[in-house]
Length: 355
Image 1 (cartoon, rainbow, N blue to C red):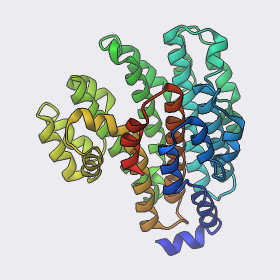
Image 2 (image 1 turned 90 degrees about the horizontal axis):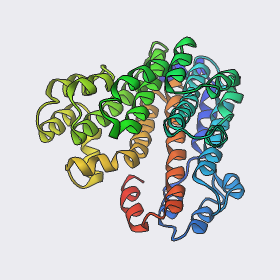
Image 3 (image 1 turned 180 degrees about the vertical axis):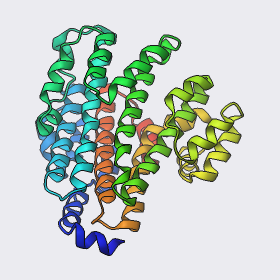
Image 4 (image 1 turned 120 degrees about the vertical axis):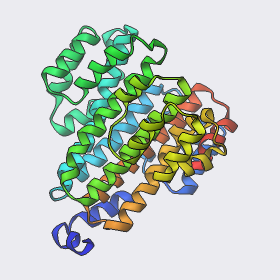
């Protein structure tokens, strides 16, 4: 199999290797995590793949500006890769870029929920992905909606991946208003993974990557659902009913967290690793670490796919793109933590174990 990839997709390997060379090193990430001030955090990123981005930013930057600048950098990087590699890797990577369009949908939906002015909403939108994919017409339509119902209707009319997610959100969120933001984020994330799942037919390397992404998504649903006391019917709406985590957890969702952790760990070893990172099997701590642990999971998944299929496989290209996206989100979270004034020891405790 690996030899076949080298023959069929010869240009892919060097380009994936080029993307991998741009990852932050462990030392660079640790320097960012341990930086005492935001100026030190920006200095820690000088000379890295994010150096030019941070030169445009400063301690007066807002969270929206930091998020947009770093995401734009990642979008352009992944787009350049997507349009320079052969099929089917090109299709897989262009499909992955839709993730950023779905982030725009999240931003629009949250702005409508908060009844923000249009000018404020525009500051939260990233247009780079629409420009790279030639989909600015999609964004133009979405920016003109009146409310959440109108947004849902427009998305459904366009057969957009987020349409069904908004449909379920409007139904479920009325019962659980305190979790409305979490439900919105989760359902749109689900829409992205289901959209990506259509690529499983490409080959085994892509299928293996997507199966692992689904299992990790489902771990998030189970742990958060148990912590927040969400009923089985809501879990059924949120979960992607595919893979060993889903089939195991759905059967025993009503049982104790301890039993669920044991059963899920038996079919998906990442659960044991999450417990090790959190230093406990306490449900509250596990949920607290889910966000930061996503980086470690993406890193391990990339290494796993590469070991099985080499850098010449479309699955390796997807895994590398996913790790770069996750790394960018980690940088965003750390820089914005400075703006929010979060204690440095808390940040070190939360992110240090995943590096």
